[in-house]
Every structure is written in C-alpha cells, then in structure tokens.
Image (cartoon, rainbow, N blue to C red; front, top):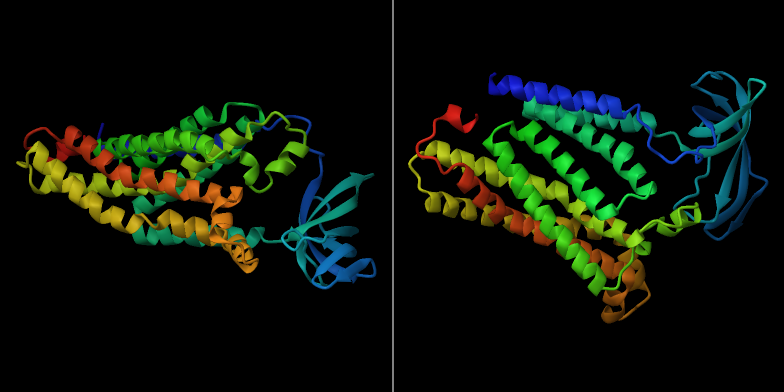
Length: 378
C-alpha cells in the first residue's frame, strides 16, 4: 500500500471519529434542564426595571422577540435579560438586536425565555469557514488535513476530556492520554505516516511529559490550587464538590503548551528529514549537530511565544494590579500572577527542550546509510 493511500485512509479515520464524537454525550446526567435554544431578533425593549449606578447596571430588561430558527420559527415571545452588575457577563439589547435565547414549551408555545447573549454563531461559522479556505489555499492538501486535525482536537476536548473530568477521572493521566491522542492525530495527519510524523510525535510527547513533571513539582512548590482559574469556584458551587482543581490546573499547563510544542517538533523533524535527503552520506553526529543548530534557530523566536500569549490574555489583570500601585513583590507573589508565571516558564521548558529531543529522535530514526526518498517516507 502506498504512503499517500495510507495517509488518506488515516485522514478518513480521523474524520469518521470526529463525526462519531459529535453524537456522543458523556456529560453527567441530570444537569440539562431541557431548555431549547433559538436565534431571535428583538422587536421591543422595556428598560423600566434597569437600575444604573455609574457604569454598572442591575435589574433586568423585558424583551419582545421573534424566533428566527427552530420549530417555533416565526412566533413571538417575551424574554428576560437579567443583569448581574458585572460587565464581563452582562449585555444590553436594543430593538433589532439579534440574540440567542433559551426557552421552554407549554402546549406548543414558547415560554420562560431567557437571553443568552448577542447571536454570534453565524459569524463564528463564517470565521471558521474563512480559516479553512485560507488553509487550503496556502497549504493545499496539507491545509485540509490541518483543518481536519483542528476539528478533531476540538471534538476530543469537548466530547471526551471535559466530560471525563466532570465524571471524576484523574486529570493529569487523562490529560496526558488526551494530549497523546491529539498529538498522534495532528502529527501523523499533517506530517504523514512516516518517520517524519513518528519523529514529531515522539519529540512532542517528550517535551509535554517534561512539562507535566515540572508542572506537578512547581505547582506544589508555589502552593497553588486550581481555584486561581476563572469559573473554578462557580463549578464547585454547581455541585461538583469532588473535582480535583489543582490537578486540573496542572493538566491545563501542559495541554496549553502542547500545540506550540508540536509546531516546534514538526519544524525540527521536517528540517532533519530534508538534511538527510539532501546529504544521504551525513553521519549520525553530523546529522544530530545540524538538528541542534536548526533547533537553536527556531527556539530563539519561540521562547517569547507563551509569554506574549498568556500576558496578552490577562492584560486587564496586570493593568489592574499596576493601577492600584502595588509593589512588584506583591504583584509577583499573588496567587493568580504566580499561576501565570508558572504557566509561562514551565510551558517554555517544554518548548525549549522539544527541539533537542526531536533532533535526537530524528538522528536515531534516520541513521541508516544512504536512504532513498522512498525509504525515508516509508
């Protein structure tokens, strides 16, 4: 069987698994209130129950909406928009606003409607579609495989990893298994079912494993727990009192950097393959040295990747502590800041070490004398 045919079969298997996962529901029973959701448009607004206190608004809006989707399409109903006084959660609606609503049914009529935010799903779908088109235009078949890997990763996290955590599975080993599955799917789909894909997979997992070990050690040393993450406390109050928040935090550290680790491992693995193809007579140590030099070059630009990603996602938090005029020691020692420092530095350990790990693995896998291109891709 040719290499190309094997890779297409692998991609079809990934697509089939993604399709099956879409119909799997492992979430704990009894948590769904049976509410229906629909796209709606606001036709009238009553703000008389909204109370304003400077920039904070509390109370509720009463909205008259027309359903634009679902079995009750075309019907109108009254919807309540509850305001909590928190800007990150509250949204105000005006006449003509599109929104997502949740409602129940009584005698076939929609009742007890609640606003669930401005309707953004169509724009999200458009953005995803544009992303897939861009991938295909730029990378061709490889871009299509990358889009499939993206879909597979999203389905595995949403349909397997998150429900398994809610069901009480151990977060760290479960996270490692999930990362291994995702890494295999991505590296073998994009890199191919060959030594390049195998090199990327092994190098990536070595980097992720080191990150996991460091996360375990330094989370204990920093005296951190998973409650530093947003919504962790709310999750406990939702009835999941036995969740191991600290272990979930540890899993989030190595999962968050696994994508960048895969990217770096693929760069080094592809370079090592091209070096061997271009110079089949190169010796083991010369090949290994070339891999180290490639690794040093790519690591030089990747060391700030996690710093920029994490710091920009928490820009308001850092601005807040700075605006309060807190000393640097207070800021750095705060639990939530310490958690981000751990995230950045431990994740960076994985990024830096994956390059030499991958170079060593590649040098071992490509050590045969004078391989042909066909043999390299076997």
